Image (cartoon, rainbow, N blue to C red; front, side, top):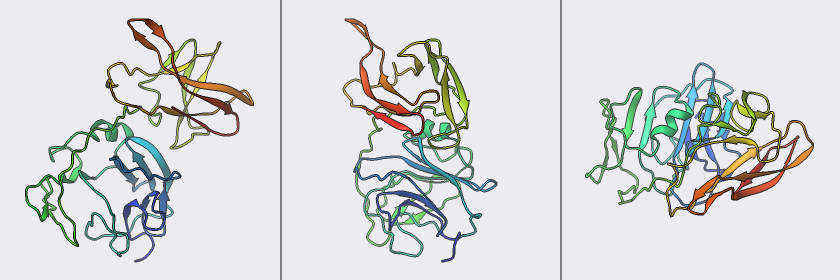
Amino acid sequence: MQTDQGLHFGFHQGEQSKFVLGFYYDDLFTADSYTDNHWHHWAATYDAGTKQRRIYRDGVLVASGVASASYQGSGAVIIGDTAWGGGAFHGRIDDVRIWNKARTQTEIAADMIEPLTGAEPNLIAYWSCDDASTNMARDATQNHFDGILANGTTRVSALIAAPNLAVNPGFEQGTGGWWPFGSTTLRNSSLWPHSGTNCVWVTNRTEAGQGLQQQFETRLQPGLDYLISAWVRLDNAASQPMDLSMLKTDSSGTSYPRVADGTATSNLWTRLSG
């Protein structure tokens, strides 16, 4: 296998807790490692014109970068292993999709937990893995790229519950879906993004507690646990306390419970999580 001729996407056989979108010795890795055993939706895009690659986990951008050269390979699609062997995946895989366009973060998040029909525009292969046959993985698109289960792969029953996930609209295409909280002004910026190409700048804050907000009233389900996190960085102060909070309204009135707090700085991104 030669450089830029071996497309692979998944947990890397050498860096086994990191996800990769690679062309063979020209690879994009996630910075973080992932070791939990829950279901997650992974997606990757490659723009052949710009050589831009992106990896998304549960609809959130987790890695991006420009390939050194264009992808030059061809050949069969192998799900669960690499074409050169030695990279067999030990786990469960479901609902595999291939598109002939570099989908946006909004498009990925919109249908990542929804089943497809196979007739969606730009969808060229879709293996739902719901076939009654025990040795086939049928492609639901009109291309009929049907696969065969091989090398000990077996079909199992599995209930994939939608992740406890309320996907943020991100900032790659602007600040749509976010609103100022207080007197603040929101501005999309390509300066110092934590990941991807853009972030949001919050300016004109006049008091503590002001910032940006998003509506979750109809998106969170009672009885489920959620992890809320954000990366923050200051522009006009060396350091400053920062927190994540929620506006909660119930029979007892309105309150602002704090989810997470920490100290933000002007030279590093800080993750708040709770």
